[in-house]
Image (cartoon, rainbow, N blue to C red):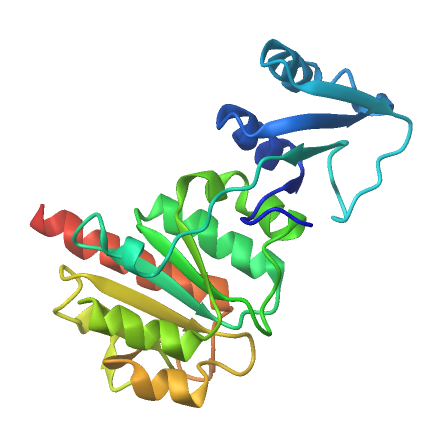
Length: 241
């Protein structure tokens, strides 16, 4: 039976290196042809007592695993209620993103912007597997993650525990740059590629906000839209700190 949590299988230098720093790696698997370039990673693993396997050809999930993968103890996921601390919380909710590269990019931006948590649905969403972890370049080690059965249910619960929920939508009535509540506990809700926010998710958000764009541009990549919104939260909060 698979162990609960995320990040048990990792590929790529940054994802594996971050897991080593976190003390999670149990087995390091290195492709023989890349051993010279990965000498530092191998040395760090051996210093920690991690088992190291050298193989002729790496069996990988990602397209470019960089010659290394690892088996690791999973990262514990958290409940929605745990995401209320520290205060003021700044959470990003992903409403059925399908591309694990986008998920990883959001996680990387979330950590850079100082967000305090991530919520993803466990249905019709990209898996939080090696591809997402590689795209995040180690950022999953620094962000608390809640895997929830329902995006709409997650939004409703976050409202109940005191967060303002801000859905990103091209049809939003207000610009994300004009919101006056970003210093409060907030959850930024990002819709899936192509479809945007689900109807019920959008209806449950406190506010629907848009990102102003030049005429003729219909939408942004989901991870780019998320990054803009998260860094706006960071910008507003830094001006009040």
